[in-house]
Length: 340
Ligand SMILES: [Zn+2]
Image (cartoon, rainbow, N blue to C red; front, side, top):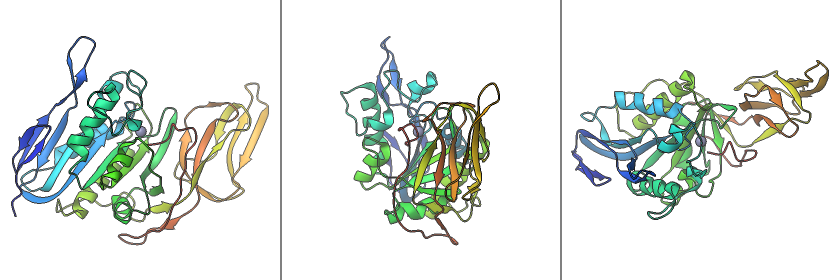
């Protein structure tokens, strides 16, 4: 079956073709147009519509490269359905290397936005109207926040069976239960019946080749699962672990930090997690795991203060058997900086 033309941001994209668009989001101080570059690919045949977004947080760069590599391999002539790819949602944040927009607003707390609101609100509204609405599935690519790194993981509401199933298909080592944050892209999409996989991998302001590879494979695997492409790479991890409960472990003492575990590690109760020492060499603290858990995120700072979140640890969950499966709920996160 041949799909019909689609319209994205006022531009018609014929079946079997790709159009690169740059709809206006607002204006700069100098009165120049600020735009939101995106690629709209309309497959030759009918199928679902998917969006891929990255750099909603302007210092989270891995997804930008994932989008570039994805666009390199997608072929409108063989695609079934349509894909809209937005490699940099927070263009102004990326320009200044910041998670936030120049006015300090968090774009991922600004949905659904409005056409007459702040810069963040206008960008959010454009993304909602032109990218999210009308889609069947979305993939939103993130990294850990400032001074942190995350093992590749897909965050979803596990009770959403469709999202959960796609999350395990993605093939990241972990699928993490994460409730919907008000104002986030994922929450607003969910209200409209569009399940979104939020991918977290690596840290900010760099390209992490492993995290990029996992997300490219995962995105292609989801497209294949939806019947949009014929071939997809092997999953980075064929048996993801579904994690229901996680929390941040914080430093009790300040000092120089030595982590004794790495992200992705399974740490058993009683095994060492970290130690801290004073600059003069006196040991301040030596902390062991109280229970078994997977290290899914960690600080990258060598110096710590009391109360600082050091390790994001998840209770062991369910290993996904072959293609699919899982189970049930819960939430995570420290002071908000690691929220998608
Ligand atoms: Zn983010």
